[in-house]
Image (cartoon, rainbow, N blue to C red; front, side, top):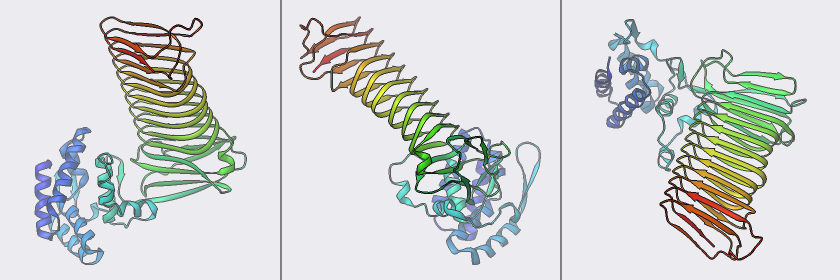
Length: 430
């Protein structure tokens, strides 16, 4: 069954059952087909895994009328429409009333998903993925399905309690969904996992003084699963090491104090607000939102943006291929490296080194640094120094414009600032 056949049958089913808001429902699943197709799923596979369009229409009716009358009409509709169709790979899939597991969602996550309203859709947030939209619909209707080993709908919350005695390290390996680590006034460690009831649960191990949490016991992929780790405040204030590795899962850490912190994601976003001695962050396409009190910071992305706010750091190394870099605060030594992304810094730093290829570089400095070196190929460079700042300037651009104003260059022992570009403009002013 291709997209057109599926949607045509779905429309007939909605007409027969008298489902309300049919244009909106039709547009939803039409867009769902398009979104899944963009991820390489064939129309036949989408149709096969979504199941009987009559059952889908019945689930919408169930949401409108409640489980009583709608359940009866759904069973009748599914019984008279039971059919078989090819999944696109030669086998036949029987579709009928048993295809949809009509279990009511339980747990906090299911309740949240079921109460999603237009407020969430109209707040300017990013466009939800087809996984989010499908989970939202199925949770509301009390239905769960499986698509290529990934479970949707009927999400529940599962909790695990771990004694905090002897623990001073945390290691988490997560794949998809979200990961949140925070602290509160409690005595033990609470692990809350929001997942489909059929998905493999997380794996938890204590290895010496390290609490290790893994995405699934069977090691396979089970779609989006949300993990919340709540640490006792006393433990969160003395962590020796915290390591997080995630694929597409968004990661949030707040309220912890740790000696060594490492967070690595593939496409997941990072939102980190912690105190650390040494912190390392990396991501391929995910953005990094960092608010830190740390001595040494290293952050790198391929296409994700880096936003860093920090006070009193000894060293900060920030690098990105195509993502923008924005940093503010006080740092003794700052290194910025970007290919096509723009680089911005506001605050104070004793030593600054910045390199870009095509990205612009903008510095707004509260105090004159001891060392300043900036190089760019085609990006423009702008530096704002405090009024009355003294320095010697070595400015060089092959084809770009060079200008400076308001800078004292007559002080003999003033530091030397070096800025060079190929075609980018240079502007240094107070």
